[in-house]
Amino acid sequence: MSGLGDHAVVLGASMGGLLAARVLADFYSTVTVVERDTLRHDAAHRRGVPQSHHVHGLLSTGSRILDELFPELLDELVTAGANVLEGGDGTRVWLRFAGHDLNRSGRFADPGAVTSFLASRPFLEAHVRARLRRFANVTVLDGHDVVNLFGDGSGRVAGALVADRDTGENVFMDADLVVDATGRAARTPAFLENLGYRRPPEEHIVVKVAYVSQLLRIPSNTLDEKLILVGPVPGRPTGGALFAYENDTWMLTLAGLSGHEPPAEATEMIRFAEEFAPPPMIDAMKAAEPLSEPCRHRYPASKWRRYDKMLHFPAGLLVFGDAICSFNPVYGQGMSVAALEAIVLRDCLLRGDQDLPRRFFRAAAKPIKSVWKMAAGADLALPQAQGRRSASLRLSNWYTAQVLAAATSDPVVTEGFVRVMNLVDPPTRLLRPTVVARIATAGRRHARVEAAVPEPELVAG
Figure (tube, rainbow, N blue to C red):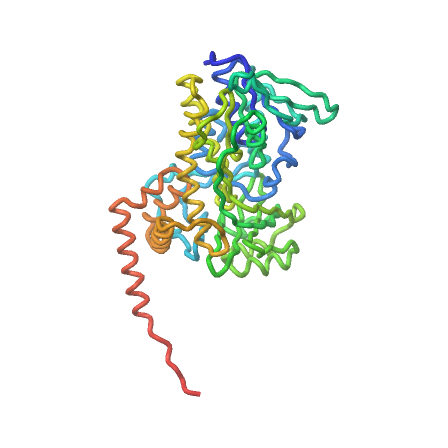
């Protein structure tokens, strides 16, 4: 399938750029992916993806879309050593949100719907990039910086000016469509100003998250879980994760908000984690062999550039992935949202390129808005986060607290929450009458248990 144009250019070869290029390969005669880093063929960290040193997982929806765009990719990942996490086995997962341990007994009614894949970011990107290179009409041009965009004088972006990082030579790349997928630091707002347009309005949630991560090897039979994830609570703005990675490695990530910096020395890291982590995670940390030095990363704020609200935008240009919206990485939503945007892009291109930017940005805003509200609710439940706390958000957070309390004992509520967390279902699934009834029943049961606990006797001294 092709015919919308001769040449599409994608700026950025991270996950968002690779997914956009895969879709464009079906509609344009040639696709060029421009990347500033020099790309190796193996699973190597690179400067342009500093978050690759920290914990990553591919949510169920992202996994499904990747396998749709690159058939049998998931089988390839497993064969190469990635871990599969099936939703039907709660003993392999320990999730603690807002101080509540989600139910780990029983099996989900539809375990296949929440199957996730655990692997490092370089491992995943290397496999996706290799699959993309198999397309005869796709070229990856690495080692080149994006200098500017240029227009044709009629309100259309006509291409991109890029420069060879070694020689400094400038290259003008004519294009029928340019897609900016250069991440949260994307310079499209400045490029738009150069072309005579306004910058997009932005929404922010200031979280000031600091991470320290380390790749580990943990002796077999040390723990049963493949994934342990503990979120912060209002009185303790710290948390952490331990994920099983490819080839019997594990990624440990510790996090803190607003000045609560995790330490980077082994003994201090264990002491930091002991404040919140379940015993299996602490035991694993004590038994682990470090395979890398601890790596630190800071994430100041989530940002949503509202291109969907712009009244005037040039033809021939789109923005994609984190360049539109970057989420707090603790929720692991970024790659899966980029996958959802890829499906939006495909659906828009199937209807042609007329008025493409407006149609794409408005359609992409729907899944982004849903995920943004979930992430914002979780962030703004913590007093350290800075952002607007509307009445609807406070009500949503109250109800989420009831869901999590019920999920400690009710496997049906747990499954519903995990499906929403994996972007399989919208949050409205948790408002179904049957789910609401189970939450209410769990609430009454918890109230009876608390009422039955005797008050401690006061002994006069």
